[in-house]
Length: 116
Length: 115
Image (cartoon, rainbow over all chains, first blue to last red; front, side, top):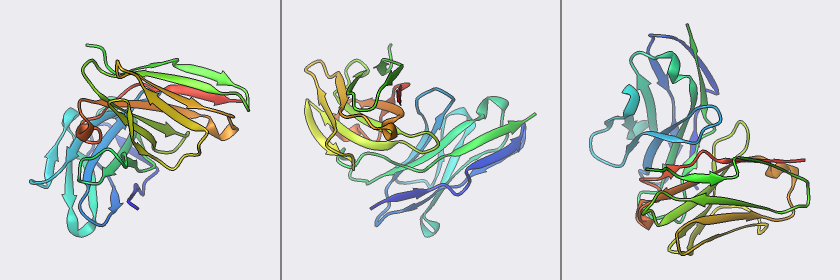
């Protein structure tokens, strides 16, 4: 079964500083990979996704992520965080057949705190 | 355009009762999926529906059931509620079956509290 590990439960970053959130997955083949953001009391918003091709993907709100097959990782980065980036971030995977049978598998999330 | 809408936004139920949660997908979207998000955890997949047929099911007991209607809206039903069913229930929709996990749009969820 596929699984997703987000090793950092909480991360605190100063406003304007760079950010990297870690994500490792366990799966027999390269899955489709996603990062979602969830603000308090809200649903999930897709930040970016990787299916194939260029391993560095750009997303919304200035985020990017890099897929590293050798490390089974898909880390999320942002060069300069804003106070509005404070939220819960989820990494997710799904098998790359694109079919709906398995649904998305999410990590437990990383809570991002922004210090002024 | 309206996004995925879920109702109610919050509700409180007593152990042993049953509950029905509702989801209206984005206009034109034919696929709907349901996820359970327990506090402090990531969402867990419950069901996927496409064209009124169940296409996938997660590891949840038979107390959980769902259906999709001709207008593509969906209901999630939970019987014999347990305290552990307290969670945020998220609905996601997409245009086609194959898009469900690659182009899914999530609603804001229904917060269920079981007391």
